[in-house]
Length: 408
Image (cartoon, helix red, strand yellow):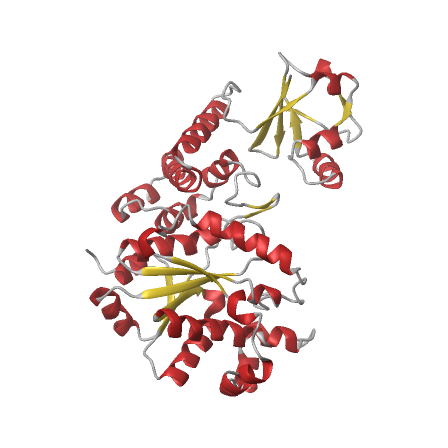
């Protein structure tokens, strides 16, 4: 079996690592325990998290043991990395709820049976820390001057940085120490924006335990246009089917930029690299084969093969001009409700095509809403039974997001 370090490097995941040659040799020589942290800032993982999940899967497939660390404690503070202002504080109840949702979702991708992987929550040790004891053991090993040189803090100095946020790095570093002591965890991995936090934990373990541990970051997934993968004008692409239906996930991936096909196939699928390079090198209309493979493979992993097939059929049906596929996201509405008429803004929000009437109004004013391929320009339009064809009404948001309404 190929060394997993080489696999991760070939597929374009690795950004930085401590003692690369040593780490590569260790990963080849014996199974190790490693961890990655997930702060519970929402009630679903996103497509951006899927890169981290793929790294965990590659590592587990190579015989290494993942620890998925849920940030029930660190989320109480919030990572200042990449933020211009302090994160909104969340209640413990909301954080606990989100962490449990993460655990459910991670279980779909990582094999936790027979102690092959673990899920732990840093709330178990961070929430009851004694401040003075913690600062005496951990805080004394952190240089304020050095911390202020890191981008996650340096970029905040002009607008103000609270001690509350300043403590985040200490807590994340303590996580590594705790996991090393209790589970012999010798590697932390994470996104490149976490390098300073991960490096601080790595240094803390080495100082206090005189142990050989390692740190590795992987590249954040961005599009050729420079935007974060999974961020759209309509919002975030979620792994929860209730928040982002399988069809929408499929369509998002099916419509990526031609320049992104090879990179996304490499890091978001398990297709052999020979096939990835072949699909990524296709030109003209042929590149759509690569996009279809990307959309199908990711949708299959996230939502299962049946949903991926449905989404694929729906996409092809729409492309060919038909609306027969029942895989298009749809909502059933009582005919009695429509008989009295319903405002287009209320309708869009009710079926989930927009999150609010305000968003619906903006969508219409910007010319982004179509009803049976006719643009809707009046935000005050009333929809009634006469607008339906055979009790069906097809709405389209933008170029590719469809929703079918069925009268019952």
